[in-house]
Length: 341
Image (cartoon, helix red, strand yellow):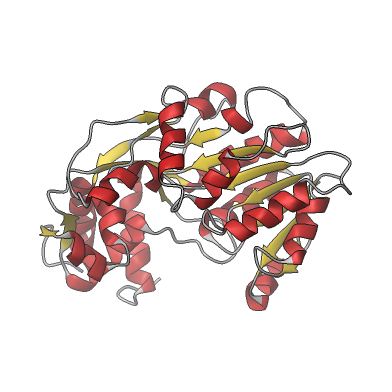
């Protein structure tokens, strides 16, 4: 039986990946790692066939699960280097008959790193990174900002030997839409912008609001993970892994000034905003409104998902961000107790 080891099942991305894998492949033996026993119980209740393992990302339990898995999907953290080392030890254990596969989540803040370093927020950029056309530029960013891209850098530096795991790293931009996982179904960037808009009765943008991120529905992100797992299970040796294993995920792009206006409009429609106006704030003011707010809403992260479309046949089909904002604002209003469910 195919064995999958998944981390992050209680989170937004990992929970949706778990849902998608479980729905499409009930034949898979799926084990998930959780730190919190109560969350583990909720996952067991939702998915009785899924085996819940309690432990930290860098625990012996995680290493042992990676050792026995055909595929590891790390959707929990892109910063826990000791966790990555535990996964690597498990996937390359001499007790294995064959090295395994490692599919890792990361994020498009990689593309924002130069702006963050310069302290530039709210300004436009015409740079759009394609994961095939600009592969070397992307790898150069990973090397340059390795202190902030710990697991990306770790995976990029793995030895290319027959004993090494085959790897793929997925870099989503703004992820939106209600997750289908059993615990956290809320994203960050648009829900947080909705929260501060509803609480303060005005929209927000960082600086001139001209910075742009690509965006993608959470179900479309999960589809990339599922397809990669299927390629791994089938043992396909095509251009999917290692030096070819950088995957972007996008289905549109929009600047944050426009996002702020759309969020404010929806709050006003619900009678929860004084108007659809948008207030310009500095990077420090954005950070005071929400942790890392300047990065979340004031940087550029534009992608072209060339590889997923070309080699995986990926076709995103989720609702557009613009059409999803009304649902996000309403969900935040309910969560805050401003509307009834």
